[in-house]
Image (tube, rainbow over all chains, first blue to last red; front, side, top):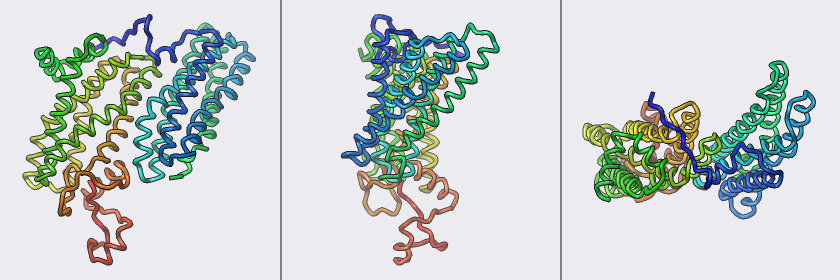
Length: 198
Length: 247
């Protein structure tokens, strides 16, 4: 199979996407900025969905789209840190904030990238069921990428652990993923477009 | 400049790897943009007009204009998603390179459509009916899409992560492109229409239509809301169903 090298981006001018998803841990303020950027980007997807009905629906969708990610950030990630600390996993609060920020920024960035397509689809598809389906697909894609980033970051912290402890941590991480999916789905379920509102 | 454009045109067909590397390297991407855009407009235009040979007349012009428009609109809509998915999965590319790569892929796909145009023309000339024609066109788009995605794959990296990025991007592309084309239909022209409309009114969605065409091509017509009114006018099939010819 023909091998193609991955793209190398100049360190002096990384793209916005590269900055948002960079694995390096930065200061707390920078990480919070990254997190806020992710939430802001997610709101763009919400705006695109809200274009189906217009008016107040724009704000409702923008808020709900960001709220799903914000809920995971505020309710899920601190809980994961506490549980990992309980089993003596070598995770620091800043490293966990960084992993969470990177994960949410990735999910938000993907949602923002999907926003132009979502705007076309939500405005032009007549059937409420089909509109809800493509909305769910977008949220699933972005949420999946966010979870992938988070689990990659946390698993990198666990590389040096003894197998038994690593197994415990991976089980906790798996439980967190299930919880995060359910939580985000619960919050995103408040999106009017998912309730079949035309 | 012209020589370089012609060289890129050739590379689009023969050497997707070279085109992918050219996109990733950055620098002066104008020859690539020009060659890919020309391929896209020409290729999609020829294919669109060929699709319309089943109907003829003004439809030839309309389809020849609308298919390149649909492809360009799709490109504009999906590039941000491609950029974000690649970054989210750890392969951030420069945005200009991403545009170059996507445009080159679309151009390559359009050239494949040109190659498939004679098959479409011959099929309609030999009497291929409307619904199987729609499915044949969908098959041609699928082949062109594969050729395009092959180029994209070389751009993001020929490995498991590259496959994941391209697969997810393909899902976005298919959904968006299908709907964009649906909005600009008809491309073939409804056989029962007395005149040729440039655009049809908003109705249903691309996926509903593809499902209906698949069923219709094997003789299964789904009942629609128009049944009652059609029945009053005596327009239903012997089974009391209304054939849908909305593509």
